[in-house]
Length: 330
Image (tube, rainbow, N blue to C red; front, side, top):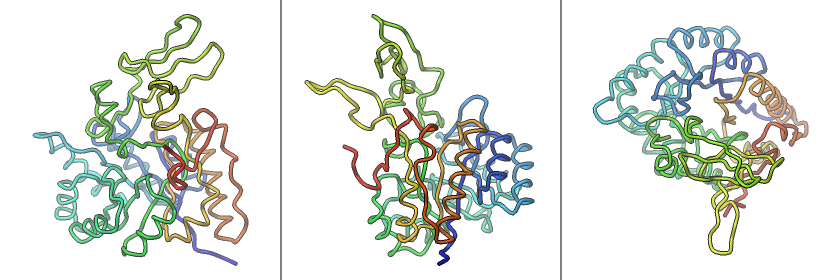
């Protein structure tokens, strides 16, 4: 028995990764400009206006869509850059822009009334009242739901709204208010919320101490592992801490989201699109993950069983979790 086709929304941090995602079967690719308007603002990643124009044209030629993430919050007195990037996305014929800031949503809806608006997960709209506000005030057509909802809660939200919902299906987990992390800002002076850089590599240090490998972020020791053990990337929300007699991962374990086995339940909950995280990943990573999940959504649409767990080797710490979909985190 056939079922509705879920839209697969895939990441691209470079033009090469963009083409790889399209060629591997992405229905939609999201990317960003190479500046602080983009919540993955890392050296060597992202797109110039010319690169984005070429990439969008490639997507449209292949029958796919391109979304532009302008999902950080403008700095006081410097909103012109963010306005210019909204204008650029509209001029370059992006299929939608992904926005979080209320001021930018207002600007885009008035200046470019025909430009489709998606609400970023950065907006943290986790209930029907908030989502209806964005839809009514700015004409938002889709909301990316925060990664703090169970499948049952997603179904309840969808029953009370009239716009599309998109949820994360694979990749890194962020539990600190969806990227608006004061911990990373405190440790590095770089705000994920405004500068687009969570735990930037420029502030990461690995050093051998007493036979252990210690990883630091902004001078703070985040992990200590014995020689030969895998050392996870030092992000504060997944750090290993000592609190009294307890030693472990207080906020979240260093693992990746893989909710492939929940595709049928998410579809039944009314979800329109499944989103893969990973704009900072390599082209080969993008190709492998997209190809695997395109098969999964096609299998679901055709009424075939969805096979999960094939991408464990590409996950953080080679471990996976269903995250808050099953509310097993502390």
